[in-house]
Every structure is written in structure tokens, then in C-alpha cells.
Length: 109
Image 1 (cartoon, rainbow, N blue to C red):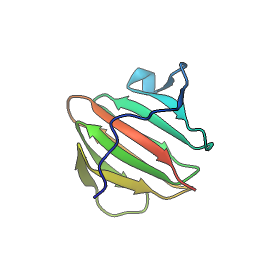
Image 2 (image 1 turned 135 degrees about the horizontal axis):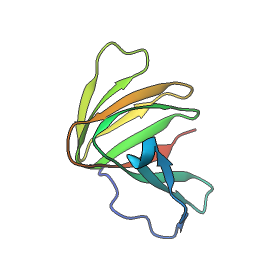
Image 3 (image 1 turned 135 degrees about the vertical axis):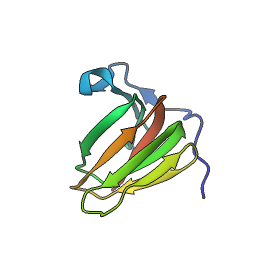
Image 4 (image 1 turned 30 degrees about the vertical axis):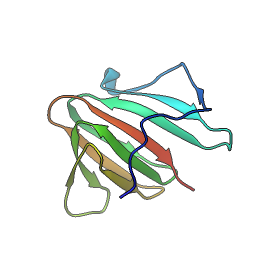
């Protein structure tokens, strides 16, 4: 499995945060010279549903979560160093039982 990045040289960081669910999910966008975008974020304890427009890859940097993709019968657990992908035009439920889950979200074509 490919190693999850720890830094992104040569990018533009957007200072304004993306804040969801009364501040329980917060991320910042980073823009790459090739036009691609990622978000770096934190999820506090709770259960949240996200819809997707583009396909996404979620890489867990720290902490742990349980994820159920829309249309799938079962949830899967992920922890630091693991990743999951979400199809375009779908969504997922993510639950954090304790602590903070840190993630990198890559928007796929």
C-alpha cells in the first residue's frame, strides 16, 4: 500500500476553513500547480453523512473511523495509514467514536 503523505511542497493553502456540522468537521483546501485539489481535515466524535460529486480518496492520517459507503451492506473500520475510496455521485456515513480523526481527501477524476 502506498504511504500516506506527510507534507505537500509547492502548493497554495486556502486560509478560509470549510466548516461542517457545527464545527465538528473542519478542513482546509490545498491547490496544486496542476489544478488538482485536496482537503486536509479533522473530524471530531460523532456520526456524519457526506455526499460526493466527484470520486474521492480518503486517507486517514491519525485516529480511527468507521465508514459505510452508500449502497453497501456493511461498514468498515479504518485507522492511521489506511484509505478508502468513495464513488462519484454517492456518499458515505463516517463515525468517530473518540478522539480526532485526521484525514486527507483527494478529489479523483
